[in-house]
Amino acid sequence: MSAFDMKTVTLDAPTSPLNIKKTAGKVIVYLAKLAKMLLVWLMQPKNWLKKRTWIGAFILLRAAYVTMNEYGKNPFKKSLNKDHVFLTGAGSGLGRLMAIRLGKLGCKLSLSDINMAGLEETRALCKKEGVPEERIAIFVCDVSKKESILRGAQSARAAHGLVTLLINNAGIVSGKSTLELTDAMIEKTMQVNTIAHLHTIREFLPDMIQAKRGHIVTIASMAGLAGVPGLSDYCGSKYGAIGIDEAVRTELIQKGLSKFIKTSCICPYLVSTGLFEGAKKSFPFSILSPVETVDRIIAAIQQEEPLVVIPWRGNMVFLAKMLPVGFQDNFSRVIGLHN
Ligand SMILES: NC(=O)c1ccc[n+]([C@@H]2O[C@H](COP(=O)([O-])OP(=O)(O)OC[C@H]3O[C@@H](n4cnc5c(N)ncnc54)[C@H](O)[C@@H]3O)[C@@H](O)[C@H]2O)c1
Image (tube, rainbow, N blue to C red; front, side, top):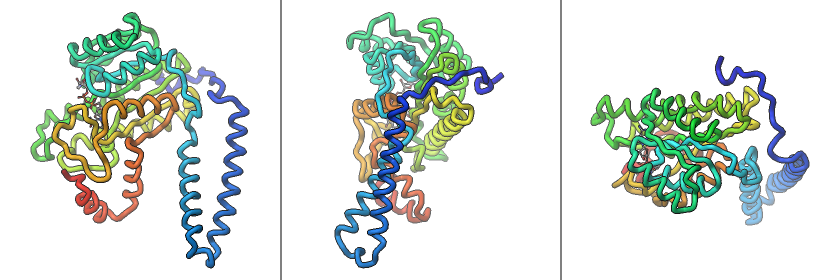
């Protein structure tokens, strides 16, 4: 029986109280009326040349965007101090910083990586930041191997019980052009960046259903939204990770589990962790710091945001996708994405 077939699950009451939903409904109706009035005014030909028309149109678009963006997001920051997190790739970079932040927020930590020395350093840093030792479990887990994931899951449950927060963060990059890649590189990248996500989700989703509380976080990349030269295996693997996130999210909705099991897919631009050493930034982006990236990831988890592109202006990729492909390719070359 698959995790999704567990029909006995009774649903929790929605996170936000009923009166908040009613108020939100009223605000949406009010905004819709306002938008209609503005549209009627804008449609009058004599108004087209007025500056006010364009300011009004901008406000309208911005209000529509903000309303749509807030839809489905938890208006409050949820507390994470009841959660038990299974975090992959916690031995360095973003994983290490997330471990420290989540530990400080009261999470029970199951930290995994292939690099034990890195994990020990992460644990020492967590303790230095005041996270009690009994809340930190570390273990070697190679996410490219299913047996290793299963062993990691057993160690995590033995340490802190059911896992309610899964963060698929471990990731690798070969940085070779398609013809330079070896078979081994391609397979490893797919196993770590994509296939592992299916194994960990399948492993921990039943825990979340049993606990009636859960959150699955995918650390993807902007390279999973737009292909770039020299990263065909990486881009393919991140497109795959984003596809898995989207499909699981819709399954949770279909099975009535999305009320208490959330998903967040995070797509950062380049971050200065060393993973993409030597890569050049392109207009209009600048290289992100690990701290600002992790701040945004934690906020996304607390507010149960389904998709976050970091920085926000990276969302322009969705608009760019509506343009003819030849134009997209030239545009990305001109702004330096091909470097
Ligand atoms: N750094 C960036 O520019 C950037 C941008 C977008 C997305 N990301 C993504 O963010 C995530 C974290 O990257 P980072 O920048 O912190 O890199 P990082 O190299 O500092 O951290 C990755 C961690 O994953 C671990 N790891 C590698 N292979 C593993 C395996 N088989 N099993 C378990 N652990 C394994 C490594 O030991 C390392 O600790 C990755 O998924 C990466 O693709 C990074």
